[in-house]
Length: 126
Image (spheres, rainbow, N blue to C red):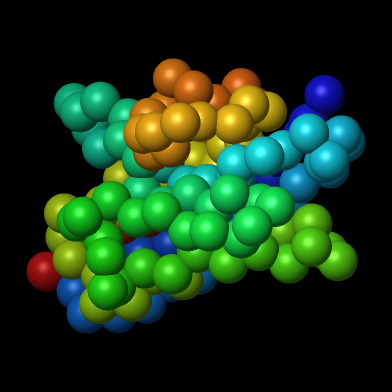
């Protein structure tokens, strides 16, 4: 079992920054991918950024490349998402999730993830 607690959401104006944090506990060794997903009202959940924990390789959705940075702290078992140059279309509930299997492709697909945090709201106003 893996437990995830995500935090750090809030309300900012367009162009601002926020940093989300995911605290991972339990069987952390089985967490091969940890990442961030989001779901806006009326839309499907989508992958934002994930990191393959053993090589530390990040993957980003095209919509956030160059603006968001995912990082992991193996000592404290946290995965953070630094979000800069936020846009109103980034408004959503953001969820941390982890997966226990290696993927050949599509690491940003939500259905591949086994454990989820409770979510943290990000609101960007224009």
